[in-house]
Length: 159
Image 1 (cartoon, rainbow, N blue to C red):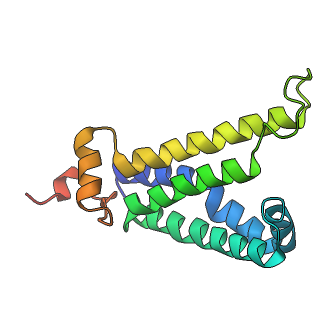
Image 2 (cartoon, rainbow, N blue to C red; image 1 turned 60 degrees about the vertical axis):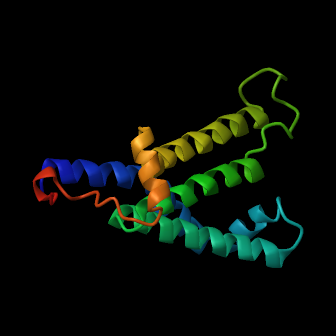
């Protein structure tokens, strides 16, 4: 394995490690707790369970696609949306009302930083989705489910 391939894999692994294995494994090992947390955002156990199962599918499926490099840009777009949705549903720093109460121990301050971390991770996934140029963004819109072949080196690219 070349250094370039190892770097590409390591960058992708760091980007998805939060979801696969950690968050997904936490949902599996503490399913009841995950459903209880989802109940904070939705009114029924059934809907909360569906949300957790859907989240589990997104975390495993999209993270795997990014690591493997199959439809990885579309998978990154889904995970970016997932990060934004989870920030809006579970990191509502504006709700506790103790943001300006002083001290660093307020619940709102912890949620504030978690909210922005979720959005920062979404930004990383959006970079993977759209790249860093208008040309690479246009390439995504032309073929949104194409693979980027992340582990192909320059010498392996065919003309």
